[in-house]
Length: 335
Image 1 (tube, one colour):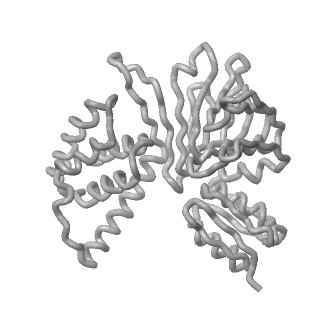
Image 2 (tube, one colour):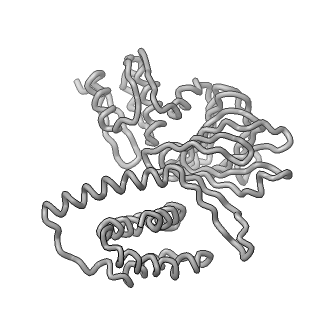
Image 3 (cartoon, one colour):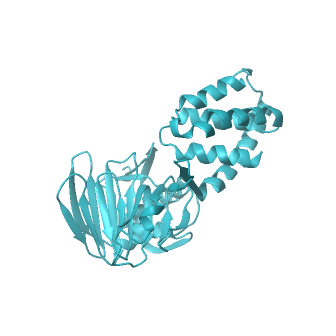
């Protein structure tokens, strides 16, 4: 059933219009019926009839109908402790499979009778990074919980190379002066010909950011006539809620080093370390003005749990923290 599961998971992760509660119901159903091949096959037959044959007119209600038709809610008994433990173990196994599947998902949307691929989507699961290569040779690294979309026709012999990003991405753009490279964000557009930079555009944040490591980029406001050109080691910040933006000088390496799988930081100021952690784990960083940002630490970051890293930093420096949703709040040590 592995292939069936992959097709369903890939589809679910490609849809922005699906409520998280509906995704969770499907995961729960898949896990609870993993050993019941006959029932799973019946569900997949419904999936093919309801979803695959009507992909152009898809509605989220279709998934709910599949769950109802297959009788996914028939078993309402409360699981005992042994069953809960077994289910948790099953979930952990499948969570690893989900991450592996979604880590490098490439979804092609078919939109006409001639089966011409129009849009390709790269996506990563929360907590996973992915490495991808676009048709022109541009290398892209996607941080956790991110998506990149592009139309294959935009990478032909004419026009601009265009992609859109939701989440965080690092680009090493292949040089082509005759075909500018554009990254579309919610409120701005980044245009280059060949350079290295990163963009941050999470849906839960009010801010869009562009950090330039090398080369140059031109950023224009969508729906407006304002634009700015960044130099290396500059950071562009757009506040969508206030419709204002600014450019500041910075060290691009502080914002771009999340792309490294293993990062050893020696005598690192706490302020710079927290920036790296915010980038690496995809959280919004809010630091109280009273925090001593110059306190230094030596630490190695790999694929550690965020809570574990923060506990160590808190123990060594005395700072306090809490995590609320996608926000990481840092406070000064209590007197």
